[in-house]
Length: 351
Image (cartoon, rainbow, N blue to C red; front, side, top):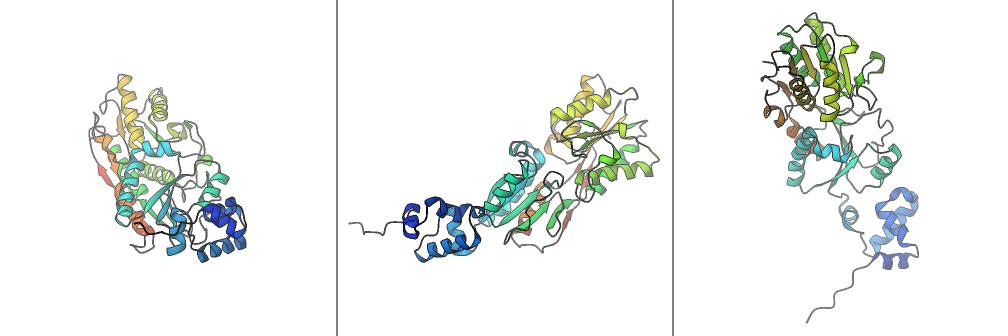
């Protein structure tokens, strides 16, 4: 014969006891921005007194002071981030550490309207945020200083937050110095998110984003400084802005670059996705790589080694970057900025 176990309190039961609406109780746990601080505190205290700890993460938060969930704020749309090889490797490395410590991830996109993102962040039942690829121009008033919300920045810099980055400047400079040994007559750069623009276009110096906040600008400075050392000059007419690392947009920029009257003999690409698209465009136009045009990339994704010709690139430790970010968030590392080294990988596209 089964024992008569006490019936679990429902949201409706609690609302009746506290003489408020079920929506008010729900908001106290899940939408704190909808209530005054005093009302929410009173409701949570009364709920604790009667043994109601709310659903799932909210219940655990009341009992332990943490939810066991970290909010992953992605700078691009979720469908793009899930298909991007670099982002996927980063998430895989981070998940490895979080899984080992019984933590879960809540994915958020900062690509939506800023007000919507702020509301979701403020109401999310998470212990803090790992912000991947933060773009200040896209999201200038992000609420990173939310009470009791720990924040780590990745591939970006946020004032007051520890960060994880790679040696973008040094990696970009090293690969450019290698490529210039072949003494190309002209050079083009296919940049990534250099401007606050959603168009494929040439750049203007006065439109470039802030170097202190943008990893793309750091890579551009590495390219430019290497060219100065080798006594090369490049005009803004030979530098393209590609708003995101997609094959379609890279294909457009590569076709424009390779269609110039003074066709570049070296194309420096700010991602392997862009480099792969550039090689394919060159082949479609009857050009040989590397005999007619040299192409270099950045990232070291597996795909860069699986096409012909294989891509000369800068390998960055994407999975390790995810692991380090998770360890920083969990307090397994000292709370300080981490910079991971890159490695020049010489392959067929620019031997």
